[in-house]
Image 1 (cartoon, each protein chain N blue to C red):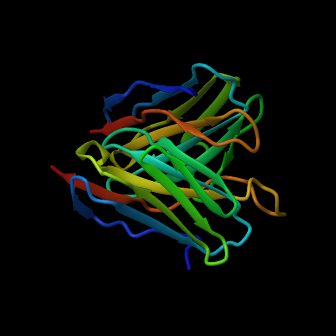
Image 2: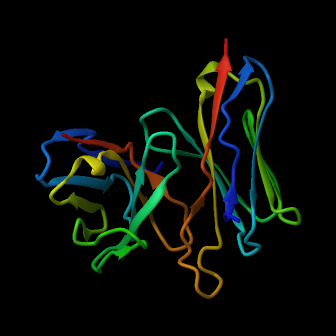
Length: 115
Length: 116
């Protein structure tokens, strides 16, 4: 199968701190990784798309300076929420795909709570 | 009009019932269709992946695509309490048409509850 992991699964932090979330493809090389945010009872909202070795492409309305994405290797992408505020509290989910016309496999998600 | 419409439910059925979940879409360029299952507080899990029109069966699950009506369905036979989850449809043109990033476009998800 295609397994994607995320770490941490849950994080609680104080307002103003930065939080890093890791997304790893465990048994395949992912040319593209995606970061989504999901609020309660809402669907997935794509935040950004990242290709290994290049800058992430952010969706309209997503602040690139606040949500820093790094896709340093074919198996790892990180999302850093800088200076987190309570309104950033959400469920963050990554997904990965092998190639351009292949489907995405999702990680288990990271629940962020900013106090 | 949103690109993908999906009734959020909730949908409640007794164990053993046949469940029908549906999505409609507006972009005729979509050719690849997926159904994901998402349990509470978990990431989505790919259930079915179909290309163009037709049916695809996998165990108790059948995915159906009607491109002429821009309508896709997921049927669950002999539903079980363990099927209780939110089901998300997703679709894409894989960037085959100008201007598209080829990203997946998701429906809002239908919450299903199967009662024992």
